[in-house]
Length: 425
Image (cartoon, rainbow, N blue to C red; front, side, top):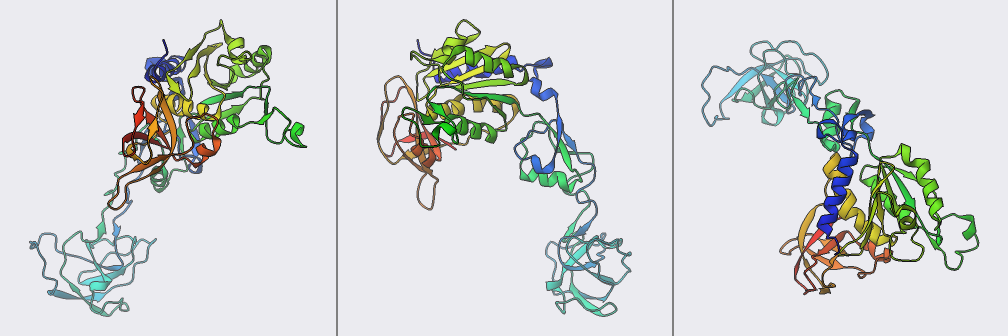
C-alpha cells in the first residue's frame, strides 16, 4: 500500500528528530551556538535570549522639534486643555541632539530638536508649529506657548524596553526588525544556532554541469544540463542550510558509495536526487538497498518515489530525479521538518484561492500543481491559475510560478472558481 503524504511528512520529521536528538529532547543543533555579525543574521535562529543591556530610549528625549518646558505635575489637568490659554516663556539656549543639556531654569522654554535629551527640570515638549511665533527665537527672547500636559511629546527613558528585560527570545527567527533592535542595544553580533550542513548529491550518466568541457561544442546527444543541483541548492540556501556539493555521480553504485564515504563524517544530512525509481539503472537504490534506507512509493504526483533512512548514522533523504519532483518533495517534506526541528526557515504562507481554470487530478493521488497567485484586491478575491501541467519536467512553468496548488487525494475534478489550498513561494 502506498504511503500518504502526511505519513511521509511524519516519517521525515521523526527520522531527522531521532538523528539530531540531543540531551533532554533538544536537537543537537540547538546545543551549539556561533556568534555572527549583524549583517549575517537575517534568517538565522537566535541561540540564547538577548537581555537588554541598556534602556531604550537610554534617556528621556523629545519626540518633536519644539520647546522643552516645565508643567506643574501636581496641577489638575482638565480632560481637554484650552490651547487658547497660553504662557509667555523666556527662550533658553537651543538643545541639539547628542549633547547633555544644562538644567531648565524656571519660566524658560528651551528650543529642542527631535531625539535630543530632555533637560533636567523639563517634563513636556510643545511643537514649534504651536508656538507664537511659530519659529525658534534667539536665546533671551520670548515665546508664547499653549497650555499642555506633563509628558506630552516626551519619550520616557526605558519606555520602549527596560534594561534587563528580554529583548529577543531564544529560538526567534531573526528578521530586519530584530537586527535593528540589537543594533540599537549596542550589539555588533548575536549567538545563533549553527546551520545544518547538507550534502547534495546529483546522480545520472546523462547529467552535465553547465560549463563542462564535454559540452564546449554544444550539448552532446542524449545528455542534459543539470537543473537539480542548482535548483535544490538555491532552495536549501534560502531555507538557511549550509550546502556541500558533491560531484555528479555516474550510474555506478560503487561511485556513489565512494562519494558518500568521503563526506559522511562532516555533514548533518545527505540529500540525493535521482536513482530511486523503478528503472534498470537506479544507482541510489542499487547502492543502498539492504542498508538502513527505505525506498517507498507515495500517493503523490509529482514526487511519488522517495527514499528515507540513514547512511552510517547520518540522515539520508532521496528525492526523484525530475526537477519539479525534487522541488515539490523539498517543499512538502524537508522544508517543514527543518522549520519544526530547528526554527528556520519560516513556514510557507498557506492561503485559500479561487481557481481561474478547471483542473482534473488522478484518483487516489495527492497532486501539486504550479500556479500564479494573485492576492485579494479592491472588490476581488484571491485567485490562482495553473501554469504548465502536471508533468514533473516543466522547468519553464516552475520559473513562472509563485505558488503551489494542492489537490487532495480524494479530489478528481475541480471547476473554475473552486477554492483550493495554495502555498506561496
